[in-house]
Image (tube, rainbow, N blue to C red; front, side, top):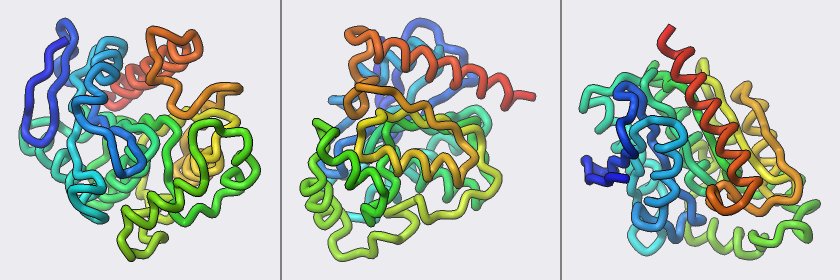
Length: 247
């Protein structure tokens, strides 16, 4: 694996990638943690499986700047790729959890500019900071990793008084003009299951729901059979989306 800083993102390659395929990956961390360094290994596995160049974007988390600093930063990462010669149809936007929130906020923004990416891949995206999803309640005792009380704390800290229904805060309420193919993977017991299902509905995407897996289990690719299987499906989706976007 090779990682080189390229503008606001870390450019990650494994072996010889297909040169016209890029993935802009936005990491998770509940808007308060996560970094290029902590996600580098996972980005490398994604690069290996998809044979694409992965651009692992950096964005400010809580201690650096509250909303809307993160959405602004990931748009700059996208704009840097476009300015560097990448075409929208050569880019898949991907991310997990809070990064999945930023994925769909970015998607809405670039679609409004008639810049349509090849596809979107999201792992357990947190798309509704109003916390109105049904499974926030029904799965709260099933989800071992995400306590709802902490979600509320993270929202308050991240938004710093901003409206939680703002489309860049809760992209579930954004508009998506002619969206590309969307694949969302999520666990059936996650509190974020409703966020995934509702986002797939408004974008015309597909939900791939898995039983008895933890939040963002894909991070265990190479160590957990369910993660290996999920990543194979995700990589196949990415590769087929790149092929379709070329036509």
